[in-house]
Length: 349
Ligand code: NAD
Ligand code: IPM
Ligand code: MN
Image (cartoon, rainbow, N blue to C red; front, side, top):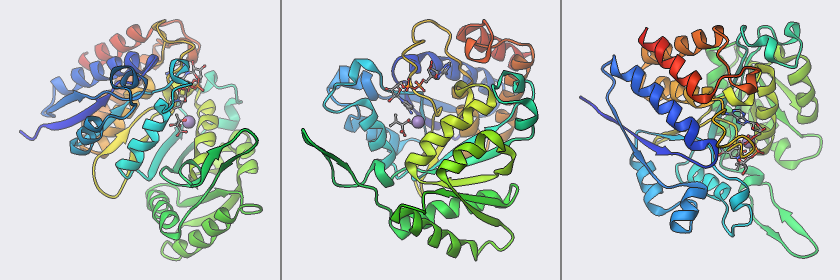
């Protein structure tokens, strides 16, 4: 058998809690199938700082590069906020080292959870869009970046090549969806955004069937909440995508349910929830594991073409949600463990 190697980055605070839950669900699902995999843990983030002095040891980079896919929970937290190299720096570096320029963050309303959203049911009904976030450039990586006692600078740069490859990812996705691309930018102010619009207009010529429009990021932030069904594929720069994806998660009921995939042109993809390490609820056993479980589902589909296995997990999650077995972020009283056990029971039943 062709055994897949999955690199595991367990993360900090709720990271290990939801990773344990996700891997237990994966093990239960795979048991009944021909899917063969092995996992290897690598030190990463705050835990790696504690063990080795750095958030991204070389062995972790090499292990991830050699893997068929990488699973990450979430890193960072107050314990390391003053570190000279923070866990977050390790996250940016691994994305960069693996060339993961395309980060896919879905927002799809689960009709059972619609009432958990603070946004009106009639506004969110039918919402189904993806944010295609550029992940290895822009203001996150621009140089110079420095801080003195009296001033600080963060530079934002994009090359045509960097814009074109992410825009193409978004257009290709839209071909199999609602054939509508929205470029979200700040082209009324920023030079990089003006370049984004030029490149997008050119790429669009190769996709005549797809409707292209542009939306300023401030207006987009409003429209995501007020008219979310407008969107199909949002393509946007690194920082805008970071912010808008947390905002969009509110439509679905909880940040704790949203998965993501990060992909490059070669090498393994990385799958991770969009949220962070939630230090405020860590150790309480109440973290929502659905973001991690759905990240694993995404991995099964996108890296391993194990659609049947992914569908089984999706159905087991859906049954659990329908039974009202929910963690507090979704208005329930269940623990991480209860939700996980129930999902596994539904898989086996
Ligand atoms: P956060 O996403 O960790 O938490 C925001 C809020 O959402 C908190 O109230 C938290 O309890 C809740 N939440 C998040 N995930 C949840 C889940 N699975 N179940 C239930 N509730 C959940 O954001 P933050 O508090 O601003 O950041 C905490 C740390 O995480 C910081 O160090 C930050 O840099 C880091 N971070 C890491 C990643 C990552 O590893 N990819 C992403 C975002 C933030
Ligand atoms: C995310 C996170 C990271 C980001 C941080 C922790 C560096 O917020 O994955 O959304 O900004 O990309
Ligand atoms: Mn974020």
